[in-house]
Image (cartoon, rainbow, N blue to C red; front, side):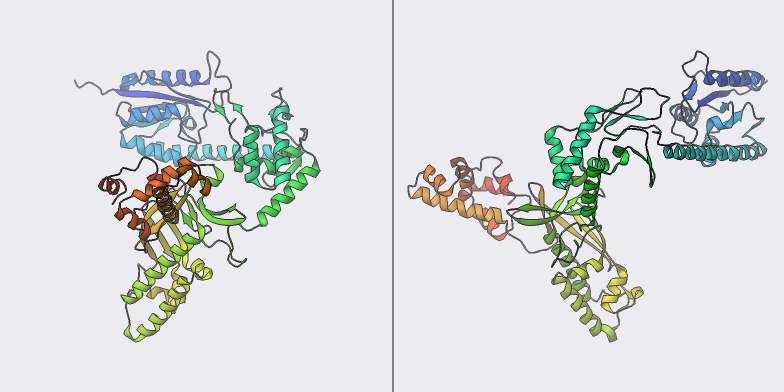
Length: 553
């Protein structure tokens, strides 16, 4: 007589809230006992109860990201579980989409599913039909419950109640958990007041961020019931902006786009709030980035991303009364220093992009690659319109470049551009469908030269460009070396040049570089990563061959 195969059964239990879980016999235990009794009743069918328990307490059925459920799925995939037993189907999931994925996974592993209070199992087609009907009602119940909760929150906030979550900087929850109100945290309230005063004085988030760091102001520190800690660190520009926009500091409660009078005390007065918000609105109306002739916004705004997908955002700095414009990785603005972030001089980057597009179109015109099927009868007209377009790009016409470029990306080795086919076809005077398929995409290799936080690009086959800092330092080094040979003391040279003698000694080494390296500095053919800072990082050897090897020549 053949032995009946064993059906190893696992019981899965779940409870949405944590209420009552601390009791000796809770809802999870009640579910487990009912399921265990059902498994025992099926002993004659070969059912055997698994040793492990799979309990998820305090977790919603709206998601499959539950620790015990994931453990159970791992056991099923390994073939160690062939039957899943639950008290009710909504203990496993309340989502039809999630249930479909679970059943598919069960089937692939040869596992079935049974609910002890609902007489069906997934081994039969009728069981599957019944299950889908029940799950539809379970999902409907979850959605109605969610709508009811949202309506309750909206109604409560309309009455000025605080509906939970991490309280904003400056406030703590009321000591009585039954009172839905905020109370002022005196120490944090002073921080909030200081941030508003700083913005009222400077009108600049960057200035507020710097001064807040200098004053040691910190973000909200919160300790969760689990013991996890959050906040208490540097106040970023984004956090400061969010604080300045929060009406809670006027004693109000916001719900989506509506603001209601709150039951908590205000930290700020109306006059300060109005002044700060007027300045914030004025700042928002100012165009970001640089202008050309005082009219045009930064050309590449919203078009370029770096290797991690971060937008290159236009910004500027002022030195000696002159503004310098850049495109920087957005994380440098919102998150502070990051060595992987890009900081590219804006005029040079725009000129490089315009030249890349112009050279690409010029080469395509010469090689008859502008259209998919070249027509000799239209060749002269097409060449003339393409030359006109290339000329406008070489002249750095901002409107032409802005219209041509849809998007671009850059990483340390490559730059890629996508052109607007409709604009390109219009500029060339041909239908868009006649364009060559690859005309709207451009890729070019990139070499990156960094100087501090700023980066300089050497792209494609652009002409060599001497490094002005290296050129100037090399020239000064020869002047100092000549003065030393003529018997001028080092201290005298330092005094006459208003430099420290150590400055003269370190940079004077460049006068003794090999002729090959000095010519490369003059011609701009040094490897892009060789900067003055790198040259002075360690003593320069006297041997010319060693020097050339050290600096990539």
